Length: 407
Image (cartoon, rainbow, N blue to C red; front, top):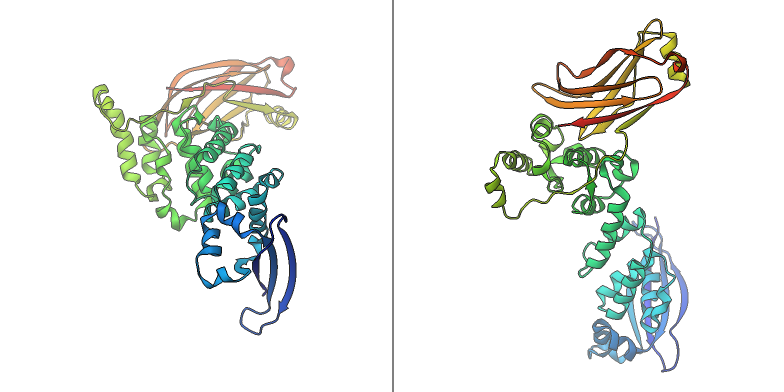
C-alpha cells in the first residue's frame, strides 16, 4: 500500500517577481505496516507581505512572532490530492483571472481553501466563476458534498436548486428515471425541499421519496433516514394517506413517521378557520397541469400478433403511475376480431382501500370513456368488455392514449 504525503514550502521572495514553483520528488521507503511511503516536496516562492494582506491566516504565519517568521521558508504539510488546489489558491491571490478556465471541481476545492484561509477576494472570484458555469447533475452532487460546511453560499445553493427544479419538473414524469434515484442525499433534499418544484400531486412526491430510500438506504438504516420532512403530508389526498401511507413498509420505519402521518390526517379534518391559524402555514407546491396523456401504450407488431393469434387472451401494459397509484392496462380481442375488451387496473389496493377514478382511451382501433368508478381491493379492474373495433386497422400497430382522472 502506498501513502502519498506532500510538503509545501513557502519561501519569501523579492518584490516584482511572480510566484513560481519548484518540485523535488524524494522517495523514502519504509517497512512500517503501511508499506512504502512517498514524500513530494513543492517549493513555492511568494511575497509574504502580499499574502498577509489578503489572508489573516498567512499574516499570522509570516508575522506572528513565532519561529517560522524568522525563517525564509515556511513548511505546510498537505495531502498530495490537495496540492494543485493550494498552488492554484496562491496563484489566484496574485491574479484572480487564473480561475476563469478552471474545472468546477478545482474551483470548489479552491473555494473551500479560500474559506479556510479567509481569502475573501478569491472566495468572491470562485463563486463568480461557478455561478457562470452551466451546472450538471455531477456538478450539483460535487458542490453539495464539498461545500457542506461552508457558510454564505446561498447564491450557489440557489443556482443548484434552480437547475435541479428545471431538470426534474414535473416530478411526476422524472421520479422513475435513474437520474432521480441516482441523486445524492443532499441533492434530493435540495430538490424535494424546494417550493418551486412542480408536481401534479403530493402523493407522487411521497412515492418518489420511498423509491429513493429503498434504492439508496440499506433497510436496517431506514430508522435513521430523516427525510420525511421533505413530503408535505397536508397536501396528500386523505384517501392516499389512509390507504397507502398508513401501512407503507418503508415510511413506517423512518424517524417521525407517526407525527407526519397525524399531521397530514389532522389537516384534512381541521376547519378552514383552524387551518388559517396554523403557524407556519404549510405551502403547496407549484401545480403542473396534465399536458398530455397519462400513458401511451404502444401496441407494436409483436403484440398485434399475440392478440390476433390468441383472441380472448389478454395482454398487459407496463406499469405506470398517476397521483401516487400504480396502474396498468389490459387488452384482448374477441374471437371474430370485431370487438375488444379494455380495462384499467389500479395495483396494490388492500383492505378497505378505495379510489374514485375515471379514464378516457383513444386509438385508431377504438375510443372509449369510463365514467367515475370506485376502485377497491376487490374490484381493481374496471373497463369495457364489448367495444366495437375498426376491423380494417386491427392488424396494424398503433398506440392507445389514456387519460386518467382521480377525484
